[in-house]
Image (cartoon, rainbow, N blue to C red; front, side, top):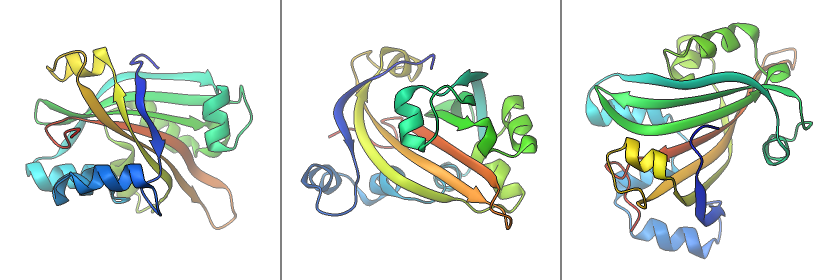
Length: 195
C-alpha cells in the first residue's frame, strides 16, 4: 500500500449494540450515514449526489503476496498471490474517495483481473456492467489519519478521516469464485466529516 494510514479509532462493525458506532452515527446527517454505513454501491451514491459519472485515477496496480492481517481478514493463506489496487474515485476532477483493494488471484476471474489492472473503472462499475451482484460482508468503520491522503484531498495533513472496510464476494453456479476481495475506502470530509 502506497498510502499508509494510522487507525485513530479502531475498526468497529456498525451493526448491533456497538456504542462507539451508535455515538458516531448519531452525529451524522442521513446523507453522511448513507455514504459511511450503506452496503449499497458507493459509486452509485457518488454519481447520484454529484450528477456526474465516477471515474478512476489509478495510483497502483500490482501483484503481491497476501500479508498476515489481510489474509486473516479474507480467510486465505498468507503469501498467496494477490492483486493490490489503489485508486482515487473522482467526480469530474475532484477526488472523493481513496480506495484500496486486495484480491487473491485464485479468487478472482481472469477477465476481472485484466479489467482491474487496466484501471480505468471502479470495481463496482465493472461488475455492474456484467450484471454480477456481490455480497458486501463484514462492514467496519474507523477513523484514520493519513498525511498523504489528506494532502491529496487539499486538507491539513493531520485531518481525521473516516474509512470503511469490507469484503466483496461472489461465486458462480459451480461455486468457483468470481471475486473475493477486501476493500478499504477513505472518504473525503466533503462527503462525511469526522464529528
